[in-house]
Length: 377
Image (cartoon, rainbow, N blue to C red; front, side, top):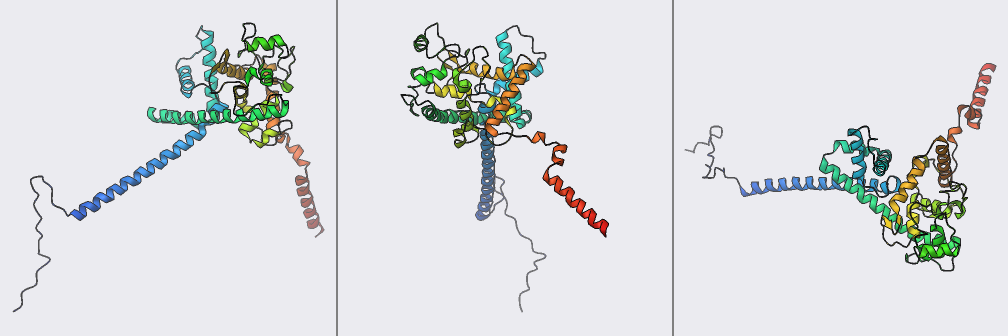
């Protein structure tokens, strides 16, 4: 007689009782698989976070490159942000009797407004991010800003040597890798750096500047000759030709368009009309630095304060005495737009002008022929 088959429906499995730890026994293989799966998931999350972080870093660093070129050359982003916060919290702002502090605050706020125009996303990001993320973002922006300034000064150091050798043919040619032979030691560099109130061809002036006498103090309170068209001035009208020199145009093109375009500084460029809102982008300070004998970027060189020089330039464009001066500034910016990007007259393409052009004329002729054919039928 055969044995009865086991009844699987009624069969019960005995669960192994836990030991004193309270853990129910499981197989080694199952535990290993679950651990591997958890580690793989964790690794994937780390890779994703790292990729996201790297993309953010790349974006912020690249965006930061515009800051030292178009917003502020020296001031920290933190100071700009702090001044905007202070103004918002402590209105009105004209409550200080310290004029130096007032003008500094004014420079900071104008810098923040320019920053908000150049990087409109930044203001919103500062409001949304927590303090640690905001500090990390500013750190990356600063890295990009300082890297761009370093790249520009290094590039201009080489290029300006070549431009001076080509345009002035000095008896002692400038070397691209030698800054010690520049500044007032070199006759051509000395002429270009000489304050406009003195004549570099005067032997007493030349000796006084080189010997750094008290009669000939070279500081940021003087406009150097290299800023002027044809490197000459009209002492009765010091605004005439200011910021129109060939070397400034070359420096701007080398920084913002291309190195090859810098060779064509005499004619008009070709492109879009964008300089109107980028008046801080002109490279006067960097050109001065390239002409000088300073070997590393700094704020002060002897009696010359580069940061104050930058502020004087910004004030020329932004702190005008009235509407007549503002009109002259607007004309100067239009001149720069034409020199860099060429002539653009799209604003003159009114409907009346367009109606007389060939595309509109042809469309009207085709319609007239169609109407005539219809009427003849």
